[in-house]
Amino acid sequence: MNRKPSIFVTRRLPDPAMAILAEHCTVSLWDNAEIPIPRDELLRGVAEAEGLLCLITDRIDAEVIAAAPRLRAVSIMAVGYDNIDREALAARGITLTNTPDVLTETTADLAWALLLAAARRVVEGHKLIERGGWGPWHPLQMVGQDIYGRVLGVVGAGRIGQAVLRRGRGFGMRLLYHNRRPNPALEAELGATYRSLNDLLAESDAVIVTAPLTAETRGMFGAAQFALMKPTSIFVNVARGPLVREDELVAALRAGRPWAAGLDVFEREPIGPDHPLLTLPNVVLTPHIGSASVATRVRMATLAAENLVAVLSGKPTPHVVR
Image (cartoon, rainbow, N blue to C red):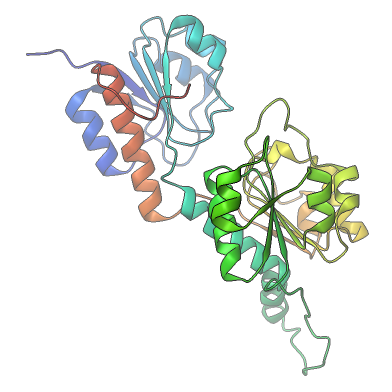
């Protein structure tokens, strides 16, 4: 009988994923659904592991990798992997896998939910009713911004960015995008037009950020970029918080350019109830829930489990991070 490889899982996953892992591996895990694994528990957990299944909340750096001398594979239940030291993995020949495609449409849905909620002041209206402030109707009561027929600019035209752009067609919008390089196939499919970042910001009525976090993109949105935006524009970030210099966004929103923002990600997560963004009426915030539908989270976990099992058993997987 073949020996099952030992793995460590940094959080209990949905049952279908745990069943896959249990069938093929000897599983140890941090069995607390509410809080990320403490550093000392992570270092202890990987000591004998041949495989590691982790989340975006886990910092997998050189120290963790050095503490796992038997490690052969790391599977992250996410698309992004900026929390993982890829150079340290590569130096040891450790394979890294992720879960692309699965969360594309779900995250694009949330981007649009934030855009519409911010543009039409949905949360602000809810709070108005909640505190008993809804008085007689008048022509300028709770007026917001139109989205239909306006200009949509997407920064980062990968899978999620393209899904966001496709939804824009249903709103009759003119579509702009900014990426590392132009994408002629995308332009032919959607009629989208490539713009430099500055031109996109100046022309767009809605800016949705879906770019990856890299050394080049970290802090790419600050005071200079917000100053280019229209005073009626909406800024949405469903990518990574550190793409935005948060204090400069707060100042820009207070100054009225952009008009409003919808944010699912933040420089440091979780944010507290005293965060300056919570003092602004023109902001809609969600707690990093871009992929948080039941079906998507189950599929993400299942794919992460399948990826890890495949690598440890010597089988191919299309989801190796190159």
